[in-house]
Length: 254
Image (tube, rainbow, N blue to C red; front, side, top):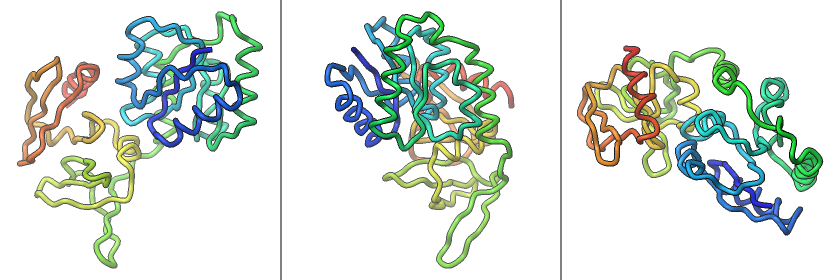
């Protein structure tokens, strides 16, 4: 049986792969993909895959976007930290789900379920577009107006309207203000993306940019787009070709 794992946390992906192999030594892990973009590219060519284990929230979006774009007809087992209430919204779109942290017993039960219903034409598919909206609303019912910055012994709220972009540097996450100040944050970029989707756009794995900070954009090599900011910033910010349409739609909402 050929399996693909979609998971942006490397240690979790490797742990899941080891667990699957321990439960069923005859399985083959064909690929471990870390993002929506990677997965869409991988499935662009027809692949002889029997089963997918997929996290829901990836670094560049929700995994539902993969299946919405590729129209895959492969059974899916979701791996997630979401609560059971949220899971009720999409359980009919996959054959099963594993709540993190998973165990050998839960992986084995999910594989048993796959073998039981193998061949059922209704094990995948559904209205992913409406599901994406639903999951985003459940993830982010209220939008915070500030992020917390720690300066020595002080805890300071930094208003979102003062932030031009969030970015990752040396595995740390920073907020960069319109006045050119850089603040170290404790939140992950994925969490910030969830909190501020709309006013901010996830250009790539490294940058989350404010709409107010975008001056314009230009075409770049390999159908990518380079973003130019209204403030001085040394690093190039590129939008991958698979996200260009979404980026342009986001800009059009200004």
